[in-house]
Length: 433
Image (cartoon, rainbow, N blue to C red; front, side, top):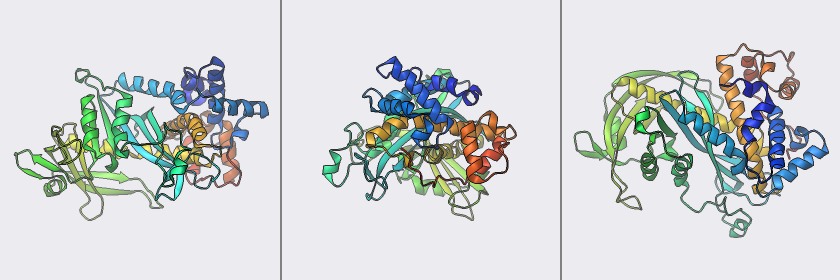
């Protein structure tokens, strides 16, 4: 990891937005300045981020330019991330995908939002993909490989006319997993000994996604939700979930589960089993005539608890080390959840108050990349907890944290900084515009 990314914001910002094609070199220069300013104080309102009214007006003019889009702003970063993945000395790069909701229900004046949640909320759907090298105990985040903001249509069709057509999703929501893989592009050739693995939760258990990923030389690792018809290794037919649960334990694994929803982290002892199988194409729908897909199932469960994973993978599982390694790969999914937390908490994206959803998506082109930097800083702090935080954390961000939490000293280590910031949620009354 390049430490200059954390010690020199201007250099870092040039790398993120210096090659952005925004229709005018002056806009690119402005994007670099705005990006560096946001990274220095990502939780603040935009007027507090920018220095002076001239800078504030220049930033808003930039956001209003037709050529300044989310896609254009994140492109230099996503291209660089894919290059790092393509040339990685590691044998495996994980591409961890997930969808999150950006909730703007309370901002009633914002035009062009879609519905979220149970349909009563209003906001933006965001599908993100991180490229990660699965180093045991401290995975390395290469960067954001792709990001797709989109909208669900509203029940009130008059509201749909306010949504930017490019954001309104008309295809099946499940297709977005395959679209992300196709956006990133073809995986390295098999002879390179480097594999790209797309990792997804139960939302990614879609036959067409796996088929389309395999067509581009990708591998897939996903959590099963569909009880699909399978062909077992002995040639007999069955159902995936029932078959996985019928397998006798073949290995043991101890795993530390991260705390969530107020629960502390805990260590669990899991039993593990696996088998080769072939999943059959769906009996109905557009995929019904497709060829079956060969792979492996991995079943892990807590004998005296509720934890159970049934995974499907196209990466070969020959023995216990293979199965346990892929469980570790799947366990790195927490990174994409942490990334979205960095967006919502570290960058306060849901508190931004702009006139339209399209404007919110545009400024997401800055915050999406700043959130990657925050996540990388967090993973770096896990392996270097004793380094002084002021060497890597922006001074303004550190100053605000110390003041708001009433800390006695700003001489925090990186480890102490993340412990202090963990419970911090932005509940200030100030507007974020």
